Image (cartoon, rainbow, N blue to C red):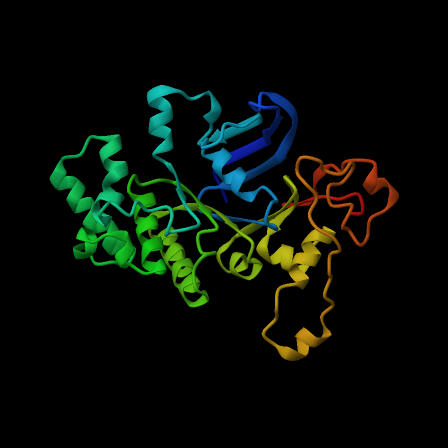
Length: 326
C-alpha cells in the first residue's frame, strides 16, 4: 500500500503577537505566544481535528496555515512546496486550493450582498469565467450544499443560521480547493443543525476528495468527523493520534481530562467514570509557565515538569505526545 500524500505540513510554526505600551503604543514589552512551535502533517483526503480550550491557539494555527497571519517563525509546506516562499501570481494560484469556513455565519457574510454575489465573489476575483459560467457555477454550488439555486437572489439575513453556514461552505468550495480549514464551523449553531452540517461536510469530502483541518472544542463532534485528532494547549500540541487511539489510550494528562468531560449516553457507564477536574485557569500566553505549559494545572506533575520543556515525540507509531511522564 502506497504511503498517503502529505498535503500540508507545519514545522516548528510560531506566531507571536507583540504586546506594546506607551502613549502611541510604540514600545514593545513582550509577546503573546499564540502558537509556539507547532508541528504536524495533514494527509490528503483526511480530516485532522484540532481541539483544545478557548485561548489555546487553535484558530491562530488555522489562520497562519492559510497565511491570513504571517508566521513569526517556522515552515509551511503545501503540496510539496514552501508556501511561505510563494509570491505574486504563484501565491494567488496556490491560495485557490486553500479555503476557510468561518465560525460565525452571521458575521462572515456581507449583509448588503445577495447570496449569489457572496458565492460568486471568489470566482470574480480570480477571473477567467464569463458571467453565464459564473451564474451556472453558483447554481451548482448552492445545489451541492442543499440549497435551491433559485434562492441566490435573496440576502443572507433572510436565511437561518444553518442555511447561512451552507452559504459559507458554498463560497469556500467556489474555487475547487483541496484543503479547507473549518474554524469552529458548527460552534454557533443549534445541536440538531450541527449534526446536519457535519454530515454535509462528510458527504462533500467523499464526493469532492476534500481535506479538512477541523478546529473545535467539542470532542464528541470532533470524534465523529475526524480521522486523527491533535490536542492543543497554550500554543503547543500536547498529543496527536488517530481518533480511536486518542479515546482508547490517551497518553497526556490534558487529553485524559478533556475526554473525561465528554458525557457517555449509557447512565451506568457514566456513573462509574472518573471525572478529572482541572484546577485553575489556562495561563496567559504572554507569560507561559516555565517547563511544561500544562504543569500548573496537571494533577500528575512532577518536579521535572516545572523545570524542563517536554520533547514532542512519537511515543508509538503514529502516536505523538509532549509529556515527561510518558
